[in-house]
Length: 529
Ligand SMILES: Nc1ncnc2c1ncn2[C@@H]1O[C@H](COP(=O)(O)OP(=O)(O)OP(=O)(O)O)[C@@H](O)[C@H]1O
Image 1 (tube, rainbow, N blue to C red):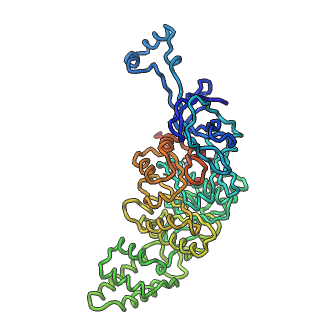
Image 2: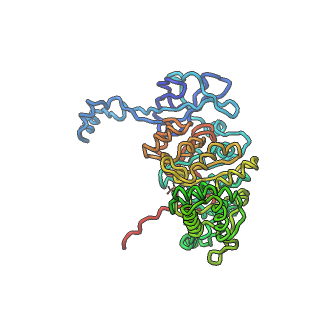
Image 3: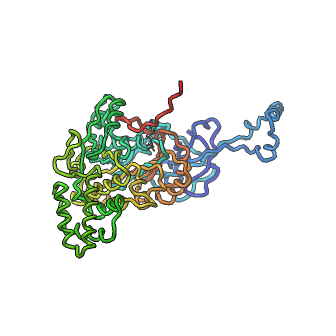
């Protein structure tokens, strides 16, 4: 169907066209249109996507605007049979050229199209053939292409191996969409998925939203892990009253001996401060102790540390430094809710199990609920767990794993420091080689470390309006154009724009319903009686 005619095309990347009046309501931002292939007739049509629509009225210039002081003036015009809106209005659209299909890829034309060539609106069947990825790999269907019934598919391999970012303003639907991606991935591939959940939202994935087999299957894959000594009573109560079932979780603990020197030093320094002498003793003592992950009581741990520290201590000042260091280590281990202080420890009547990284690397959806911890503890745990996962993945290599990091600006901030930043940068840079994929989620892209965000080669945008964030995204992200960003500002609640490696072209998506319950809710005010 012909829907317009090209009026301007100054580059092979885009063109403007006059939209025919009778189809004006069918051409919107995001609509796919085609051109006859002016470059290679054997290869089928050239696909383009409308990125801007303007309405133009050539009579409404400054002189006419000056006359439009009241409705009477407009009615007078109409009385004389001059309806300016009717006689002088045209709709113009700008479209970005995606290219013509050559096998599974799109080839861009090298010349601009010609003015006065017709623009077509493809039938859904034809569009579906053009848009389908057809590469026999694992595809994630996260919804439909906006305004169409064509499934919106993401290439799962590219999404995982080259990392992805979900970016939107607060309440924009990021965790809903992350849940959809996790559900799809778990349904279609045998992959372990680890979710860093700072708000305790993702436990809701244990509850199927429907009685379908898929919904039950995915919810059955969800395992929730809670730090050993965190009080979860209010979250559990909320869960019970909202979903009518008990939240299931495992309490986990970390062996303090398993911490790297950097993390132990960072935590001690944050909570109690370290003098130079204490720092030096800790560094040397930690080396003497070696990486011995055997779980012992806190008394044995402190004794070992004292013995190792004693080897490097000379003189009264240093002995004092060692003894205060040991007090600080004891306080840290006893007070931080994620350490195990002895084998067989309980919280109330619930056992605390030593976290086994191998469990997290089994097929399933592993939710690490960090909601009971303060930010520094969260960062330390994220650093510890993710560096262990990365280390284990470098050994097994062949099995991909996906790590979803909510509120990524807290774990890899662009300006302030965090104990987890270097681990996330390492995974972002080197994870691909070992099958470790990242999916970072943030409401403030400009606050995410550029070395992490720039490695996320698929981006899923929900609505963003903050100009600083938009500018940052433009500078850091490789596969995004100004036109795409313009569109990001006007997305609706259930709309998303996917750009980058996992899609053949920027894809406007109406995100599908969830199979499992969504945890995040925005409380509404109760009207006063
Ligand atoms: N595709 C969708 N279909 C239906 N409702 C949706 C969709 N996406 C989001 N919502 C609604 O929008 C609300 C906010 O979504 P969500 O919790 O995912 O936002 P968020 O961006 O993660 O928020 P925050 O920044 O606070 O973490 C949800 O409670 C849900 O009701």
